[in-house]
Length: 265
Image (cartoon, rainbow, N blue to C red):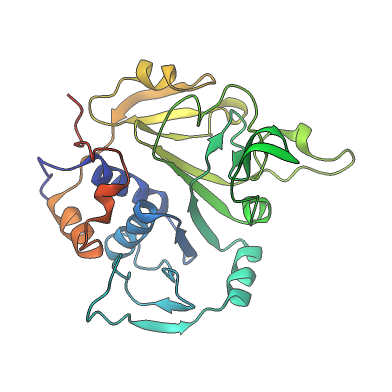
């Protein structure tokens, strides 16, 4: 395959996010948001044909559905997948979602619910916890955060613990903590995981032109750099062709402010 010489950061992130499902079993895969959804589609069309997808439909699909207006495109359905079957899949652990919390802390706890103030009267009301609590202990979750700053990777705990992390103190007394299964964390600066000592956060690749020191400066808790820290692989021309097919209206260009290039000056 030919490595691309020109690509956007959004396209680099799609390829990086797709790696979440590199060794996936025949699980239901959900990419929440445009770039994770494109990443799931890219994975299915290249190295993970066994994964199951719905792309927001109530049906399983044979191939990823392009983003935006479909025109004459007709989805290729392969089976009925209503919410009841989705929940059965979730509870059995046979799902791997990529989620986008607004805050993540050193314990890998995620927040999509509210920001600041008292929980009953926050400064900013967001979605509420939604399905995060149950999903976080039922199946594997990876994360995508398009803005890597100390406002997203915060110094203390998240304002609302919407998804379970590795902080055993958050479990009620007398209960046995259920440790989450967290895949990779992709940001606009790097790829991370929580597989360091005592589930600490590690940087496992840096996007082109980014240094570990820059990532640490934008993170509110200590990070570990893995041995032989590498650069996040650039997209291939074949991958870019698939991304363009899945995103014919170039919605990916609207996700990151200014649609920056994939290689930083």
